[in-house]
Amino acid sequence: MDTNAYERAGPAFIGRPFSGDAGKAVILCGWMDGHFKHVEKYAHFYRTNGYTAYILLSAYPDIVQASNQKEDIHHFNDVINHLEERNLLTSMNTVQTTEPKATAVVHVFSNGGCIKLRHLLHSLHAQKKSLNSAAVILDSCPGSASAKSGASFLTVGLKNGPVRTVAKSSIFLFAFFARSVNWFFTRIGFPLYDLSKHPIEVSAPYAVSQLNANGNLTGPRLFMYSDVDELCAMDEVQGRIEACKAEGIVTEEKLFIGSPHVKHAVVHKEEYWSLVSQFLSRHE
Image (cartoon, rainbow, N blue to C red; front, side, top):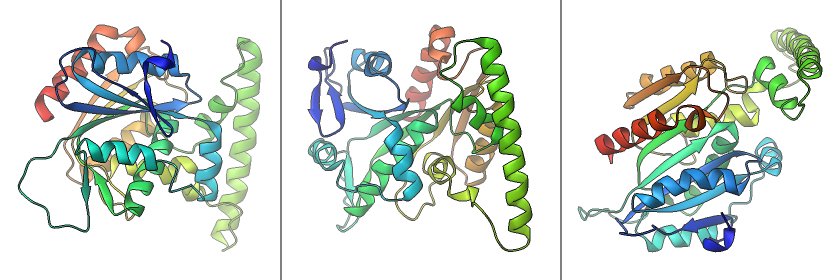
């Protein structure tokens, strides 16, 4: 898909419905370093069903900004203006009326999408605004800042199977050792690194909680994950699901069998989109 078929508003690619604008919108937060042509395939489903699609791509500089907590809160200004024109935002400074507002679906992919989402919500909160979110779909996320997932992430570009296995094992052992050393120093009051400040850990709550101080998403959650995902392991996602349920948020989940990270819609195409459609029909 040519990006020229999309409008631009700051970092967002905006695709209008192919026909019959239903007045709906979806924000898709792509996985880390995901190419436009791949994320756009998900937007195609929504545009076919009357949605205006906003695509936000994630890149490695997003990790650095989240690590330093120095995100540019003006980065999304043009996107925010566009959302406001569509009546998709609520101002925190004005008295709310009973007049119905438009709502958006938020579809997030992997930890990279969660990092991008956090940045957007921070930017909205800085302008005293919030997104009118109707439902949130979480594909292969959020995970945790674990040694196992980190080793998989750092070796994802290696195509040679045996080489990747050796590299993953080496990184995992090093990370495990480093984490053990850090645990010891934390116990005596001198932590070397606070994993709670890792970009994955500080971003995940924005996907699964409605109690964040600097911006929130409301609405039910649909978690879609798998038993063989190496980047966002099954048990990590399930931990996030339990945290979501503990807040009383309406939560649904689907555990796919055998599909790799962010490949559920490829391996289980019909079932994936059927689940999405049913979830939205219940909650939008």
